[in-house]
Length: 622
Image 1 (tube, helix red, strand yellow):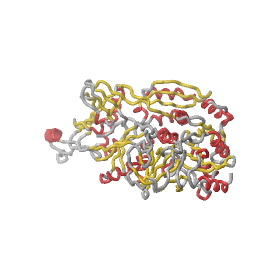
Image 2 (cartoon, rainbow, N blue to C red):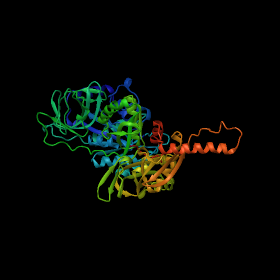
Image 3 (cartoon, rainbow, N blue to C red):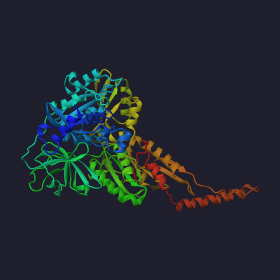
């Protein structure tokens, strides 16, 4: 298909709203590193949406952090022209992330589509996130097109994995398309299959306008840019629109499509995907999942929105320079606009000052967001060790939600419930023993095991979230030489024998170092934390005990030795009794000092203890 033909096709589909019969909305779903962005690059080239001189690898990955890490973090929508049977079609593609921490991005993309390309690496086969994304697509009743990518690799086994894929989705192995995103082989067939296999969008063109917001970004000059999928009716420039959840009204300054750069059009019709600009600067007025309608003739019912994402991991973010707190607050507001899975609330710490308690979908999500804040807003941040949410029921029936050990209630506790996850691990059958041993040591219970083929097995475990958010993935990779893949999803809560371990310095409790751990791990946590603080806290003029305690019971102790002045330096020769008298006098002075002395913990000691990535430092802060 020549780019010249596609330019003409573009002219025929772009100026105004396109007929729904000539629109196809689809997304690409796959496990991380299976070639989604590379395949999207080839599609952009073959359809002529991006000229050769403008092309670059990972074209739709706009953030530096995405390009450096080679992963997709943000879904990107793009409109491409393609001719089939002499008809000009508009293909709206959404490139989605593959990592489990960004599955919320995938779920939003699926809600805006009628079909999905299920991409599998023909050298690695089906992996954990492949299955998770497939089940998400099936829940949304999408048409699935199976595609085997990277067939140009020497290690590719397309026949073997075509059979696996066919068994999984219930089709024939011959129906799996063989492509190479790198060389472009087979990509034209994929574009043709999108038109023949994926249904056209359905909606009522005469009904009041209803558009679903599936993404938003903040532009410094133009304000909030809102990405929508139009379900019913039509939207045109200069019309007044209303956000149905907030009731706010705005004038449409610009409406258009991403192809892949923004292109203003005369409006959007049924089934089209595009962007709206109203000039609004308040990021809270454009909520992902909201319904946009016309203020003059509003729709009676909003569209069913997305489920609100539930944060899995909590961590504190504090600016090193306290004067950066307002900048951090504005930055979180703007990032929340295009990362709806982020949750945050203000928090104060005696050790670290003012900051925010943030909820994330996982550790990679935490790491990426912190990187974005530091790069895009020039902030220096401290992040505390991650913790999860616990539900505590007291003997008198009162319930408390604990996101931070300092919130843990005192008194008689009847039950503590912790979040559980359903983990799916795909591994070569040689490593079944190593994987099961790891899961058992992390308090996991086996739910089932299935062989996908003679040498690949799917193991399902139910595990406490607190046991996997630290180093579980690293341990899994090291025990299986990098071959295992992990996917997990929320699976309710379970009662567990959890205790709060307090750290006492010189008999005084320091809330910042407290942690909620399983009773079996309390002793090892206490010993590790006490040993760490003994090295971090500078020596005082008197001896300082560092203790770990559960309630009033001390379970571990280390001692920071006192700095001693050499009072015997002036005694040379003479009787021993003279030296002993001086030492006794010093000892009395140290005793008096210990009674009235207080331990000053320097901020860098707090930072070193709280920011640690080691699994045993499951502490949080006040």
